[in-house]
Length: 569
Image (tube, rainbow, N blue to C red; front, top):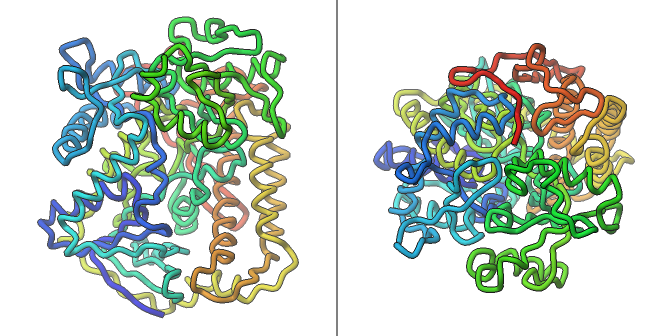
């Protein structure tokens, strides 16, 4: 086993991870020894798939304000967001837009040269800053290019598959990692860890997520003793392409696209007349599902019935300027040109509102572990995230955690190596020696199908009870899987097997949290408890791992600006 030692370890190299690394390097004037660890090549992180925009208050003279952005976010969250986190976020975000501008990102511009902004769902002002419909990719490229100025003290571990977070005496010690390139086991020691591994969208079958977004960081943190917060709140994006689930960005509707049922009716007039297609995502997704369930959709493959996203009214020139990627994707994947025909879409699993429990600075209950981006729950998004707030969250808390962890590393000592590292490697060694009769690929397939059926846009006690039972059956079967490839170099069979174990953990926490929460709020819509229940459920769920499954506790929501009111649009 190889042992590497660094000051700060950043696990995950998407927007949050790169922003954290850049801030830590700048704060320490290049003196900090930083490790960037990713199971992918650095620029393959799922953040490159973000399309539509990044929210920030940039037009105060024209009517936008910090208070308005905060109100939109709190109301959009169905009042489960921590309002101190929201207030901090909206004040910090414009600075990040300007930093990226100074670092060279090609923001789309107005004719007068100012940074352009467009409408997004749930926002009462067009505050989504964008770079055509490739915003995440260009933000990633800009951060990476800027980070290379500090490359002397940045150590990259691309294609390093991390299997566990090692904690002793309530202090982070290091990571166990399989170096896929060189085929060896590695222990990476550090003074501090920033988790930036993203969400768990692959627990669903119909999803916008890359195949690699399997909840690794969430499950490893959970196993290391950290609580997962509000995991029952999964966002369904209204516009997933049929049949693949590829994201049709909210910018489609922000630029003027409309939703139509099989009668050609613009059905959002019925559900959110003041916002129409730009109502919050949870509302639009529920509206689409009602249309489909009542026979006003179109029959689709594999029971994926759909409605239409119609961009034809935008015209050829605007689609080519503002939505070139959307046209490229639809032409490539289904042979459809949105200039000429409407796009078949339906709600698709898109975002994990919950995550590792953190404070306002992104610090977890373990003193030298921070979390940022989708893996974390600070709680900015509450029960429903507004579009364009996710890339923004990655930038703000990437910066905050990078600065906090860098300051910590400058005064902290590296923890001693564990006396016995064999325990940390035991699960991997057991898989390599396995000879069970269960197929972990089949278990993954059944898990994803189960979540699609039981934890979708609408939920019931009956379905979730059956879903939880199925997950626990799959967990038992998982104990008897086998890995055919017994090597370490590029052993994707082993990697997939470990990922499936992570997915089972995340799915169990999310399902139990949803089953226990007997109300409807934001992305958690129950048909057997249709009303929001502030008296009993205006609180965050915390899930702690035990041998018998998740143990649930609760903590209060920060209500420092606005008391909850009925959510109407």
